Amino acid sequence: MLIATGSSTSWMVDNLIENQGGLHNRITESIYLSPFTLGETEEYLSRKKFPKDRYQTLQFYMLTGGVPYYLSLLESRESVAQNIDRLCFDPKGKLRMEFDELYNALFTNAQSYIAVVKLLSEHKSGLTRKGIAEKLKMSGGSMSGILKNLERSDFIAKRSQFGNKKRGGIYRLVDFYSLFYYRFIESDAALDKNWWSHNMSSQSILSWMGLTFELICLEHHQQIKNALGIGGMATSVSTWRHNADKESGKQGGQVDMVIERADRIIHLFEIKFSTKKYTITKDYEKKVRERLWLFQEVTKTTKAVVQTFITTYGLSNPTSWSIVHGELTMDDLFND
Image 1 (cartoon, rainbow, N blue to C red):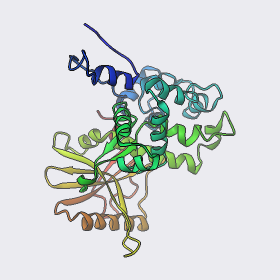
Image 2 (tube, rainbow, N blue to C red):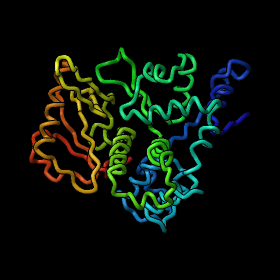
Image 3 (cartoon, rainbow, N blue to C red):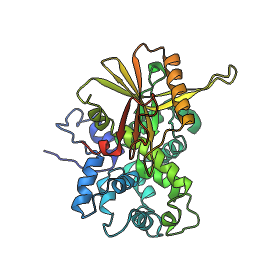
Image 4 (cartoon, helix red, strand yellow):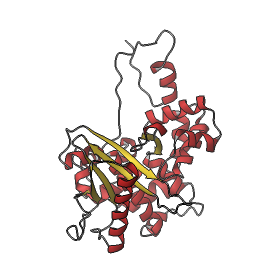
């Protein structure tokens, strides 16, 4: 009996999982170890004597993505900002030097993988396989292997497009550490070892938190389904995007998460990160209403379409606007 464990993804795939020689089709069982969920991360941090603070746990998840090794580096005696400064902005910080070591350890010809990851880090909404190949000028054969290995290793995810099955999926970077690295560490030319503490209220960090909160919601779609009371119902999770037509003047629109239910209801999710209760303004209400109309107009759906909000602390005025069909908070994401 042979038991193989390791983190070198390309080697494991080429030599064991997709072996064409004597080991072909000889694997009895594969054990997939996924990152912790928010709920599991909360439990882990509690055992490390961290105070139970879900906003703090959410911030740690935005950096670590629930990877146990990264979580093990956190110190309970330090604040979120102090932990991030020590790990990511101190010249000897363990996560400051992690990026190149990580990809070189996991993948043969790591630079090709890094090129794909860097490209996706620059495209929040993701790219199609064709779009990636064109921008990087890669052949179809090599591109297929790279995307497959990155997806198997949870660095990227392929999201289906609502109502657009022929065009294939959209690839998005979903590795939280890689997103953080390209957003803050790679560009930190000043080498300010307390950069996070000095800039924690900046628009740059708040914008990043908004992006990663959307990603956390996408990665916790099962918890969202459970909170909506449809955990056992057949559903499909997708994204939706409609490009603007400059010639006709028609507007474009995008929804980062769409859940289509078997009982003919479609949820369009508005995901908003905020340090307090989120307030729906009159202008924002108009924007959401117009996008809802655009979705129905473009997709020609005959199903009921409802708007569901996910925020950190809830809405300050959920009953003020008719666009709010349902409301979830970050607490719902912790319930596995």
